[in-house]
Length: 453
Image (cartoon, rainbow, N blue to C red):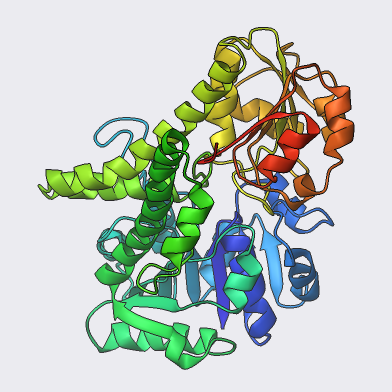
């Protein structure tokens, strides 16, 4: 079997690398029009940072995993095509700010229809709205005058950035949605057989394609809902003197609730949660369910409230002004163990601080300076922002430290040394609750955490 994956990003690259590792008899080509990205996948510095990914890629690259910009050739020669292209939130027209922009998906479908000379299985790997498979099939059939048979499957990814390789190698489940009828079942069976090389059969679930598409949006909505719920309670904890971590531990012991995704923070980020919830909101509005749409929109509203509240807390505790004060930002990625900054809370927090005319010194162990400036829409020459390669340098002369990513390295820094180098009084605002609050206060910091006093 020959597999083509269109899209060499955070989903396509790691997913195909793991599949190539466990399916050595299958030739897999990952294609992308971005030549720089493809070259990076062939180099010693991959475009995606994930623990363990380097070893997996290097073990299969050039053997049965290939990266190429020859998109048309890979499409024409393949038996199965994974669509792992971007589906961002629309910024224009109908549904702007909520609906998914499916232009990349449609363009891929049209290209597949034009280039195909043999039967193909198309697999939706990108997160898409429910019934997108139907649209793909319409495009494929409309341009099909050669008697070619296409089957469209839904196979959403459930990996989390920072643990992608682990999630791909030992998934909670693999979900495959297929179209009704024997041909759809036969296509699903081929994909099941691939995953069965390393995933136990009982963890490979098959459903109708519409259920599979909706399950992805629903899973992310439920996870984000838990984060917004505990973050909402963190505000109440600060007002009443309760400790949000103690509350989360107590309720997490209830087997009906469980402990996962009850870690309060400055807010959730990443490429999926907000985008998928907004997509779900749009679908509810489209199908005439405004109350359901409003319910899910509150998850996003609470996330925005948490980020704004964090900025306001910084300003209030620093004597209601941070103008011309240096603030060290520890962490810019949306979570640890990834270099992904999409929808990272750091963007909104940094912009909020810049609006108050603060000067920022930003350190992140994996995010390059070029990405930070791009995300903040600033020139590298902007005097208000410096991106540095050392956390101690970032903190030197600073009035405050603001922790925005839970990198493990921040837990082991010499904060006594950092305190000595800072302007006094020295503040610490821990947006991830990674540092011991009382110990920081004993060092002399005016230290604040989420959901604690």
